[in-house]
Length: 320
Figure 1 (spheres, rainbow, N blue to C red):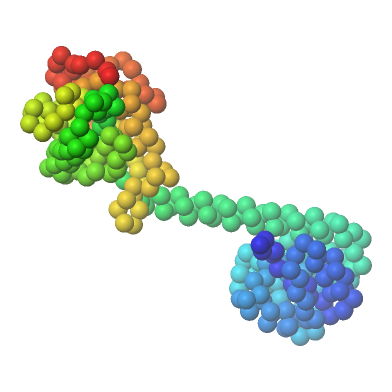
Figure 2: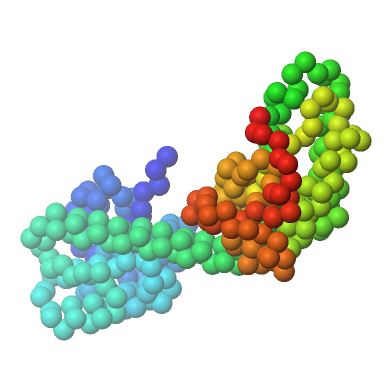
C-alpha cells in the first residue's frame, strides 16, 4: 500500500482550508488547522508525520511567520508554503529567508501553480532522502571495507574422472580432497569461504598466506593423489588468487552484494591454465616472493595474470 505524504493546511478562514483540502486530497493526506497554535499541536504529534505545511501569515494566537520559524527549528525537512490575503513584499522576503518554499497571494490565481510547487518540493525531498541513504550506505561500506585475498580452486574434468567409478569411492575421494584443502588453508590462517560443486573459495587476511597455501597445495597434491585418491584418475586443479576490497558484515561474513573481488577471483580460476598457480597483479604486489612468478601477458577482467614459475615448469596434464 502506497504511503501518501501528509500536508497540513492552516488558515483562520474556513473556506480557504476547505479549498486546499478538496484540491489536494486526491494525491495527499490532508490535515487542517484554524490557526498557528492548533497547527503547532498537530506538528508536534509524531503520529501525524507532517511533510509540508501550507499556512496563512495573518492568524490569531500564532502567526504564519512565527509558525514557520517553529517548524524549521523542530524539523528543517518539513516544507512550508506561505499564503496571504495581501501582497506584502517584506513579509514574503522574510518568509523565504527563513526557509519557506514559496509564497502565494489569496485569492489564488492558479491552484495548478501551487500543485506544481508542491510536486517539486516532494521530488526534492525524495532526492534528498535517496542521497542521504546513499551517503549512509557509503559510510557503512567504508567502515566495513577490508582488503582480503581469495584462492579459488576447481577440479578439472571432475565429471570424466567420476565416470564408471564406485559411488562410495567417489564420495570418499572428494571428501578427502576437501579435507586436504581445508587443512592446508587452516594451517595458513585462512578459511573456506564457500563451495560450489567441486569448486572451493578460500579467504585469507594476508595475501602472502594465500600464495603460500597455494604453493604448498600444489606441492602436496601428488602425495594426496597417491595416498587418498581412490579413483582411477588423479585430481588436477585449476586455480586463481586475487586480492581486493570486500565488505565484511558485523558477523564477519563477506557481503555477496559488493563482491567484485570474489567475481574476479572466480574468473581467474576459470581462465587459468590447468595445474598452474595463477595470481593477479594486485596479489603479486602484496607478496614477498613475487620473483617466483612470471607475467603471462594476459589479463582477466582487466587484471594482469602471473603464474608460479616452478609449478608451471612441471609436465602438466592436458585439460579435461
